[in-house]
Length: 308
Image 1 (cartoon, rainbow, N blue to C red):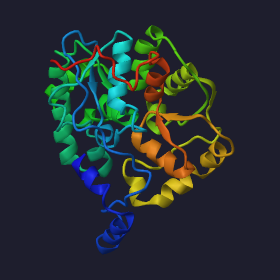
Image 2 (cartoon, rainbow, N blue to C red):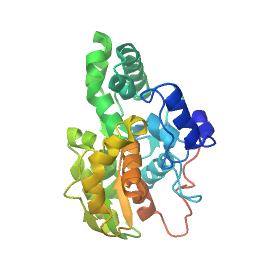
Image 3 (spheres, rainbow, N blue to C red):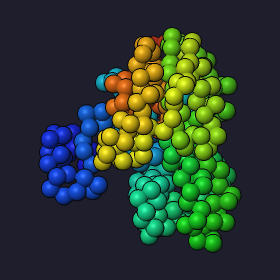
């Protein structure tokens, strides 16, 4: 996050110069669509009484800032809407320094993948009190990584632990555990959704449309919805890939106005922001807004406080 804050002060021209001086495949270009950083500290949560361990993905710890000055960031929204549904989540104190290992795997760094894969599985086992609680992950690509892609890199002992863990994508958590316990206070008129590649692999694109249907009167899945090709930081290294991959979907999305543009994977949302000029965000942010009691400003429910 500190690097991101520094990046806010570095113009795109500077990163373009660095890319020419080094190599375009090594230095990402700072794009105007990059969102603001998340809060320095995660929202206060309690381990006691938690229904799940909440693992905020690295990309949401870095790029998880609020959409506006008064709105919540993604972590705040997930914590608030989970508590509102009577299914509070707990963010471990030592979540910093762990990740799902997807970024290592996608870059071909086998040593880093092996190290981080085993580290996160061992940590998740401890956080969940030996798999007593599920782990909720708030980015679909990271859910896929932790649930499936880490397995070949695990030691025999870690693989046994992993087999007993329950890893839930935030879409599954929200659709199955939260939505039935929530009251929709307000709905937006229309929403267009972007199902991601990892959602297709996880088989939960239907959860995205179900949640969107709960918060919007009209939900549209573009006929040409496909891979955005942003692929982590790939869209910051080769903008032309995202431009080519999203051209047809972007044309369909921008042919009319929508009140909300929804997905559940931060880097794909950035890619779609760039492709369409619209602001995509997690459907969980919209679920929090739609279920926020009248008179409550932002996501913060006063029942949520610090603790272990």
